[in-house]
Length: 365
Image 1: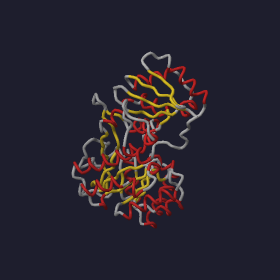
Image 2 (image 1 turned 90 degrees about the vertical axis):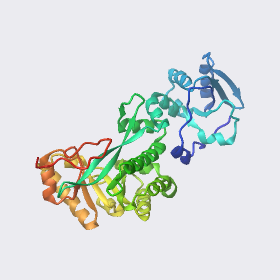
Image 3 (image 1 turned 60 degrees about the vertical axis):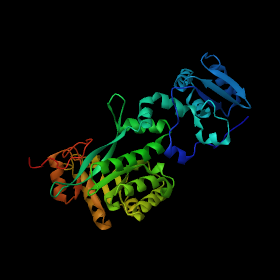
Image 4 (image 1 turned 180 degrees about the horizontal axis):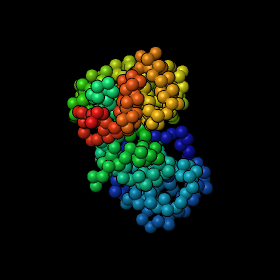
């Protein structure tokens, strides 16, 4: 039996391209490590009158008029999760010859079934309909805007907004997180340039687990920022999903690369995901963004105040700026101001919006 062990789609292709799924005739190669599983697939697919299924060498070739319809047939077969991961597919054009090059496009049927289930998000990615929302970051001493965090959204074909959690959930399920992370970074840079924010700090999120070689994976983002004339010191690359980071050596390599290129760095979820003092010292970011759970009701919670004061001291010792996230009440703001916190963001000032605001709510109003 022909087994393509370990020959999955390359990481580079994951970052730069999407599977080409269109409503047109298709050809696909299917194979599974277990002989019985391949026989099961063959028996199921041969009952579908709209598909042409034949065996060549030790894999199946399936031809049909619509790949989405084919995926629905697979979904109706109710394969178990382990079966979905075992069955592999290579999607091809009808006239495309079989060659070693197609091995770069191998995916499990689990990934493709999730593309069918998240078809709305997949279509957003195909059409380049990712958009950026901006939330202001405020100097707490004088209520002026220091910069903006760029936040991911999607616009569906009917004009409705797709929230970031669904985009990221879909991307993870479809094995497209590498692609989405790169596309979101570049969308943020373009949007910030469109609104002429190059004279403010612009915080752009990235997921460190999608970057295996900073010099290569970050190349297009950095080239784009320079092409658009951004001052590198005004771009701040912010780690998201901090609580999932387990390889600190790799994360430090990424942050060091950003710094070497002249950019600033930030850690999110401080006080939640990044609570280890040695970790903070080792990574030494330019900004520590304190998790909103620690900020919530901090004006009345003595334990939270104690933790926050410790973070302020860490920031002072490291020369790192503290940024409080999720400020929602005047009481929280007043406590943060009295503690000497330099920066903050949250609904108290402004919600994320498709266009950046250039002034925020007056705390005295």
